[in-house]
Amino acid sequence: MVATGGRQTARAATPLIVLALSVAALSGCEVADDVGSPSSETASSARSTVPGPPLPTQDPELAARAVRNQAAVEHILGTSPAAMVMGASAGFGFRGSFKGLAEGTYYVTAACTGTPSALLTISQDGRRDGGRLELNVPCGRAVEASVALKSGPATVQIVKNSTDPGLGAAVGFRVIREPPP
Image: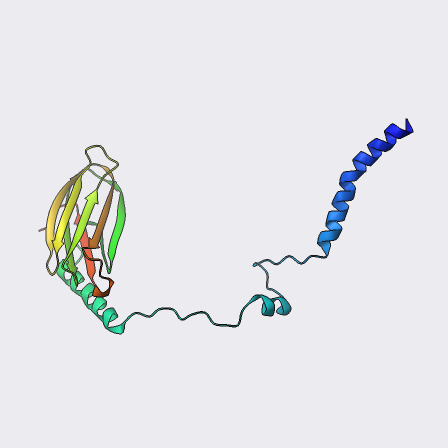
């Protein structure tokens, strides 16, 4: 009986002994975290004093051209109408979503500068018989079109038709629910 009781005591004590040894072993370890402030000794050894490479800078001439092109797109598109559902202008392109459109006809005005042309797409790909508009926009003037959309979400995207990053191009569009005056 002593032998049986001894084994059970030994089995029950084994996990406690392993746990105690693990805690003792870990108590001497230092665990680094990025939440608190490191000690000065740790900070000097963990962080390098060598500065990283400089961030790229934009060519000042290209930056000025991009600003001029953006202003030209805004001028071509004119003042934002009060009935505008969505509109944007950007340097490289834009992609966004309408969340809950009412069914009806929508009028689109698009423009671009600094590149030969842009492509505007409005789609309701997830909707059965949803509307779709693909509009090639020659740059330097406003292009208008209409699209019949079903109620629900729609996606609009406008991008320049060029892969040349050095153009400083700008694109923009406006979508309204009622016909322009």
